[in-house]
Image 1 (cartoon, rainbow, N blue to C red):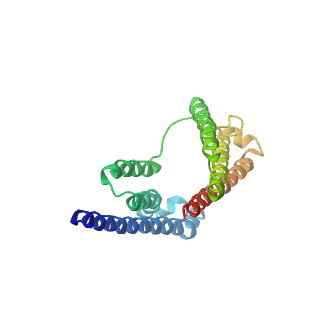
Image 2 (cartoon, rainbow, N blue to C red):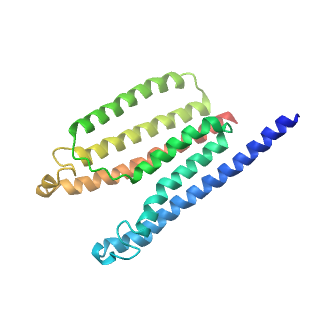
Image 3 (cartoon, one colour):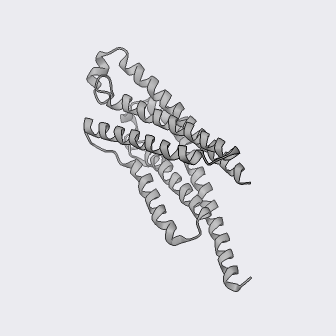
Length: 228
């Protein structure tokens, strides 16, 4: 083994160690922020008037609020970049992707002031459907060449796509439906069933999202089994 090969191997090992550290730090940040918010902070905010917290660390846009708000996007960015470091040793190809991940994660903190634009919902919904059916056509071509665990992995992948599409559909119905969507609070107040329906669809969206990621995990697990 040449000195150059030893140097590359050592560098890769160091990169993997840094990547794993970033991944686990990101995971801890996300779960700690979620645990802090859901089990400690949100119940306090829910059961007390917000004016009560003005001038304290629990104030809206105060330290605790910002800590919770930043935990998820930054934790996700850290975990994603960390796993990229483990999977890719060529930094020249890594950093453009890593920069994109950071920008997307930080975009979660942006609070848009846009009004209701039906064209936006129509175009984005149509684009999602177009990509869904285009993805299915490529998926079918690939699956026909697979066997055993690899084919099962592809099947799980398809199920995850369907659940994610259901989530997109439900969110569009909750927000943009002109008959009872939350963009039209005056109609929500007039229709007795509108708000319970929104709650129901929001609950389903959360369940379908969890199932979508579950089947995505299963697809990658099966793919890994097929390669062993």
